Image (cartoon, rainbow, N blue to C red; front, top):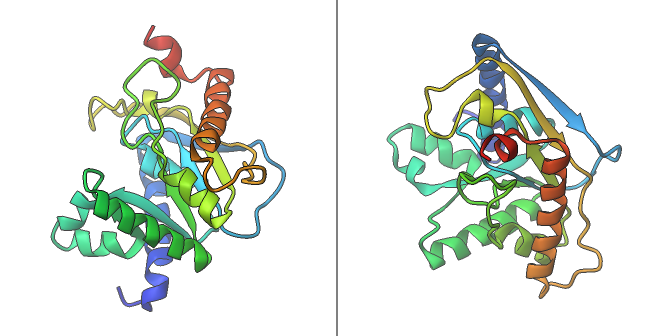
Length: 222
C-alpha cells in the first residue's frame, strides 16, 4: 500500500508469487512451466486457463511471470475487511449475476489493456466438475480480445486436480504441477461481431490440447 497507486497491483502479484513459491516448497509440490510457443509477445495479452481447483490461482501466477497483469476475480472477496482493500488493488472484480457489474468489469479490463497490462481470466467462470476437458466458456474474454484486438494465450493447468481436488481445500497431495502455455491465438480473421466463432475456436484448441496431455480428470472421472 506504500507504493504509488499505479504500481500497487504489480507489487501485489510479485508478493503473491514469492509467497506461493514458498508454499509450494512447503507442500512438496514441484511446478514446471511448459512453453509450446517459441514466440514472446511484446504487448498485452489475454491469458485464459481451465479452472479445476482452488490451487489454480497459485499456479497461474507461477505461470505468468515478468508481466504486468490484472486478474478477473469474484467481488465477494473484496468485501472482506483489510484483505478486500488489498485484493482490489490488483484484481478487477465482477459480480456475475449483475449485468451492470459485468459491463463495468469489461470496461475496467479494456482500460487495463490500454494501459499496457495483460488480463487473466478463467472463461469457465467456476470449477469444471464434469468428466469433460472443459466446461462451457463465457463470452467476456473473447469479446474483449476482439474489441481491443488483443491476442489470446491459452494456458492448460494439468495437475491441480490431483494436488488439491475441488471438493476440498484440505486435500493437498504432494507431487508434480504443470502448466502449458499454448501458442497465442490471433484475432486476425475475426471481426468484432464473431464472438461465438472466436470463443469456439479457442475452446477447441484448449480441448484438444487437454486430451493430448491426458488431463487426469478426463480419464479418472470415467
